[in-house]
Amino acid sequence: MRRRNPIKSSDPRRVTEEAVAEVRAVYAELEANPPERNCTLQTECCRFHLTGRTPVLTKGEAFTAAKAVRAAGRRELPKRDDGACPLLHPLTSRCMIYEGRPFGCRTHFCDAAGGPYTRKEVSDHIRRLEEIDERLGGDGGRDITVAIRDALEEIR
Ligand code: SF4
Image (cartoon, rainbow, N blue to C red; front, side, top):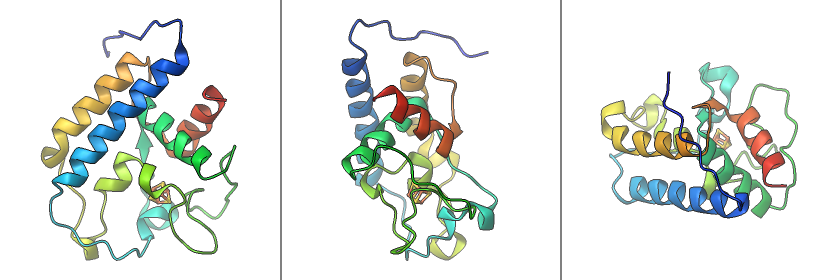
């Protein structure tokens, strides 16, 4: 059972902004010192029906992705029923929120690109994302579509 220490603030917007800033800092550190990989934008990892793996997001990551969805000019997640990520653009096959993509998308690489990061390589980043989640009263990692959809509702 995870210890619960949710943030109690009278200003939920500020709490969200602070959490998003922390998550972005974790992402920036990962980008600044990444283990060597060579993504060639095959986007196979965005097609969950092919990989059998779906990214899960902590609450802070979901807010961060939801903000990126909004920044891309969308109020809702696009609908997609072919087993691919709803944020994979159907025409360009590019991620619609690349700068705000979740941690799992930043650390999972197909074998051709060098393979996924090991947990040991990113354990500190994961711990910090989990701490943010805990402070937000989150439930740990949740399915990308559900997590971002709920976050879009919360930041409405
Ligand atoms: S959020 Fe972007 S990078 Fe991650 S699975 Fe979806 S389309 Fe791919």
